[in-house]
Structure formats: C-alpha cells, structure tokens
Picture 1 (spheres, helix red, strand yellow):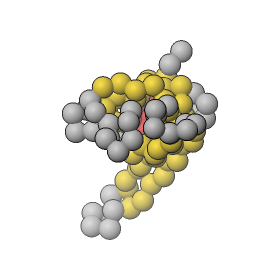
Picture 2 (tube, rainbow, N blue to C red):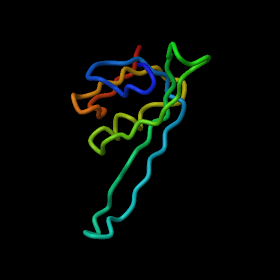
Picture 3 (spheres, rainbow, N blue to C red):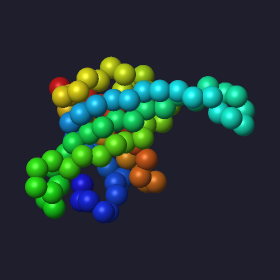
Picture 4 (cartoon, rainbow, N blue to C red):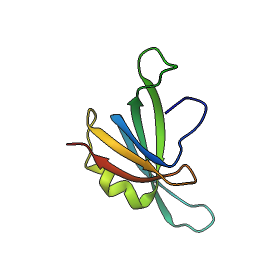
Length: 91
C-alpha cells in the first residue's frame, strides 16, 4: 500500500508487530466498549525498511485478532470505506 493514499478496497499481506486490546465505559450510555489496535508492518516502495501502521479493529473482529501473536503474517481486507472488514492468518 502506498503511503499517503490510505487503504483501498482489497487485501493486503502484513506482519503483526503488536496487539492492544482494551475496553472503556461509554460516558453517554455507560455501555462497555471493547476496542483493538493491531500494529502491523508491510512493504512500501517509498519507505526504506518496513512501513508500520496501527489498524483500528472493530469489535466484531476482536476474537479473530486475539488469536494472533506478534510475527504472524495476515491478510487484511478493507471495505470500500477503508475500514478493516476481515483479518485472516496466512499459513
């Protein structure tokens, strides 16, 4: 993925660098909100070395992300709005 363009609809192969899962109480509703940030690295022709980024993962995908460990290679699929819609481990 080229830097500065943002994700386009499609699949990208990335390497997991770190995972942050947490939760907080929504001040307006009091509802517990779970969140996940997936730290990943991939190749970018404009970057010497690896390009790294943090992906915000929706609560519907958190169980999939909790099965990952740093070093795993994953395919990340984006929807037409540039949001992560699927994550699958590459065998």
